[in-house]
Length: 250
Length: 207
Image 1 (tube, rainbow over the protein chains, first blue to last red):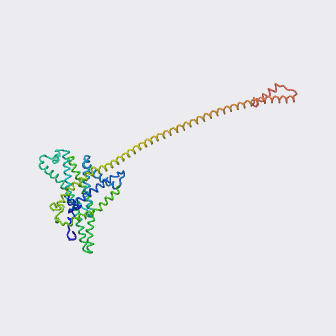
Image 2 (cartoon, rainbow over the protein chains, first blue to last red):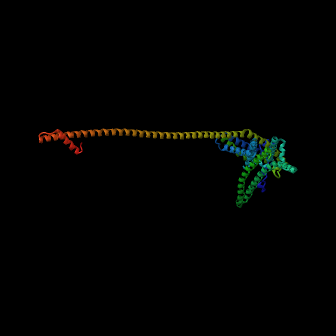
Image 3 (cartoon, one colour):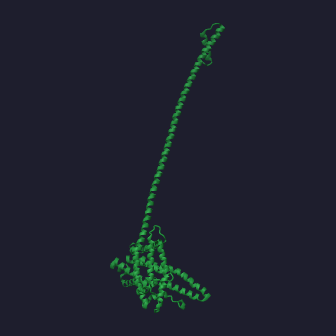
């Protein structure tokens, strides 16, 4: 891209087939490959971490246990003791998004969380689950969620549509937040990296000039690691909050 | 076990660039229509659209597999490990509490035993002191009585000896006076002499 003197920061998000002709036939892209790698690494971490079952944990076990404790505590704090049923789901979601974001920080790796199709599918799974949970627990009483208690009945025609829109916009905000964060980070990294190559190609002055975008990129990489963790956490905690609403109705 | 797993994880991570470049190489010779705009939204593109839809379906399958692996395999195992540790810690705390209780009981027992022993020791010391004083008093009394008796006996002996001596003195005086008078006067009146001796002795306080 840089060789042509044009910055194409979006090219990195294009899907390309993996696993040869077979992959092409089943639309198995590099994005899907990285999803599999993420699931493999998560399973490896959690199974290997629990394998020894030591009373005093080693490093791998401590990592697996802190991941478990972090999400378990968050789920119980947000939803309450009833929330333990949803812990495996929230945990899978958090680890999947976290590993997707973190794998994306490795050079040449693909960030599957930078695809709105992926983040929206995850958010849709969340919202469908939340709605099903609410309907199973509360039956038709679940729909009282759209008219907050104590609201004057006269305002119902205004409040109910607003509540419904707000409910339906949850998957959109949930998915767009993660998608936009990952895309913006990777576009910025690509743009500054391209600057480094372009300015660096201008001889001695270029070498000195290129240090600025390079330094900026170094700082950005650190920042992107923070964003990678933070967005996974936000995704998980919002899922917990939505589940709390479905279980307790406000 | 965990070492080999760690190696496997590292190898997987190391293979990522290779996997990515393999995918890129495969894509390159195709020479498909260029993607305009965001590839994430290119649902209408002949190749990208198919992969985008495939991505969603694969995602549902893969995430489902992850959920089952976590819910049925990994998380219950880890929960078991955490449960074992919690039980172990609670058991150890309980054992420590019991040990502390028995230590406290032993300490109390020890204190009372010490106090009792001290009291007993003081009582026996006091008894021994009293007994010794009593014995001493008895012995002193007996000794005093014996000494008083001996003094009495001695005094009586002295009085008897003095009386005897005094009686002899009168006899000797009378005999001497009779002999002297007889030598000088050629015969003596024993009665007058005894009276004279008695008078003289009385005059000197030896009656």
